Image (cartoon, rainbow, N blue to C red; front, side):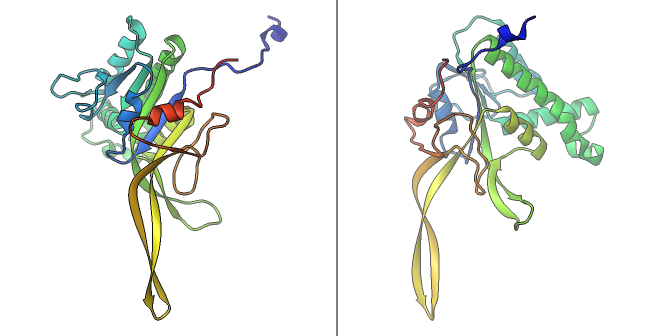
Amino acid sequence: MNLADEISGGIVAKPHRILLHGEEGDGKSTFASQANDPIFVPTEDRLGHIPCNAFFKRRVPPYCTSYEEYISCLTWLGTENHSFQTVVTDTVDGLEKLIWADVCRQRKVENIKDIKYQDGFTFALVQWAEVMACLDALRTDRGMTVILLAHTDVEKHQQPGIDTYQRYTPLLHKLSSEAIRNWCDEVLFIAHKVYTTSTDEGFGRTRTKGIGTGEKTLKTTQRPSHVAKNSIAGLPDELPFEKDTSWQTFAQYLPKSV
């Protein structure tokens, strides 16, 4: 093989792998439902009010109840004829509970914390690797965009040379969170805009209060306050996040092949 023949330039645009995290009710599922021909693989009961295609939507319960069932949905998407262009996991923190249950079943324990030395969370990375491999296959072989939705948690974060501070991060165990964030092309965070007002209380004292207006923004770049990242040239650090146009506002920046 002549490696010189294998050199090429330009942009080879592949469907993106996107992790979106935010608080309950922030519009994560609505964001994903606006993507191109999405199919939801639900791990929680969250989609009854959203007009979208989803596995198990009319079943009781209307979501995956085991890790095996979740994987069977991805397998179906990879082997059967369909027109879906986006696969949405809603949510990955719900999926993590199914993965932990699968680890417990295999290790014959009641709780993942019953596995010595906290190794259960390391064992769970095997299932996470399978999930990412299945999603990569859908992305490569079927041209599907991958969207992972997650709730947000607040964690204490330590960096060398500075004091510990708090930041918003996906509601996942540290090991799985790092694996998924490294794998994804974009990690997006839904933030609430907060304005501050100061009141003079006398005697040289002031009181500062935060006021929320309900306005939300989509954070695309890592900051001390939140976990985020992006691989899209020209994507602003912050985008408006409005209910009916949130996906379109973001998707206009997705690259096209050159």
